[in-house]
Image (cartoon, rainbow, N blue to C red; front, side):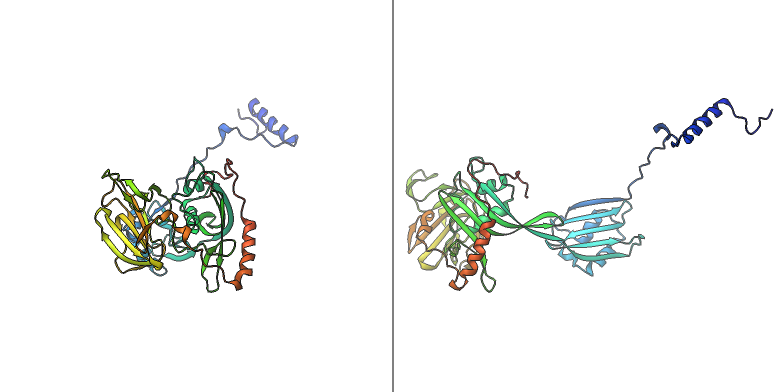
Length: 426
């Protein structure tokens, strides 16, 4: 028998009552249980992002093919690139980032041209193979002025290690060493307890640290003496570093022909036991132990007198300087100059090696004055200070010096760890 439309089974009536009661009390119906919800569906990704560095000896076309873009699209991509950038200027080790579909279509390709610009290629939104846009885009850059302090300790006995412990990178160490290269031999003069403080610029690219700008001011405490340096630009654009009295820190001679990663392994002596011949003989120079290939630079402006093989001295460069000085660089692995060349202070003249009579890679560096050998480690004591700031500019220099002095953090006290975590600023 057919039931009337209003008749319901007991189970259906109970369900209706429950729903009605909930609605009548002003409360929403209870949500369905977790067990009755439809599970989320993970849709497959349509694109893939690949980041890397350009390998040696490759072309843009070869790079794109290696990244699995469709071969029939690559010529159009290269052609579009030529409208804004010469693909032949692709450089090894520069960074790139590619976004492509799994079918090999281009979504976006960014290539780092230099510190300031990048190439951006983009595919069409409708996936039309030939519709590629290309543009050269400037990076968003920001420069910040910051300060750091550090200390030479037994645990960090070199400037590299002390700078790393202070949270900064090796490029900043090299810059600081260059500034004081006429005052300190960073291979031999640094001692535990020496401290440094400097104010410098940091360049951030797209919000990330990119490079160091110039050091603006620096203070170095070494064996009881305090050295200060301030960056100042003369009319005409020539920039240099000067002490607090306005004297140039650029000396006639650098204190060392190596940057400072080396150590003194043998000093100037009138009677030294030769490590190979085992006889007493004069050692009229200074030996710096350094890895093979380390750059050796001219300590002063001069002319190359000779560059070649010199018997037990191996490959040697000899330079003639003003005021009767000559310098010798021995046991080189390679030579970068030729006789008759003019060189400037800091120019590369060769690389450390162990040619000739040598027990290991090192540089034998010698200095003569009017034909007489002198001790390179004491040479600077007899040389005059650098050229001063012109008197007419002293007021301007003094104002800049005082402004930078206020930015310098005081050197870290002994036995106090720097606040920054190692590597934080790199």
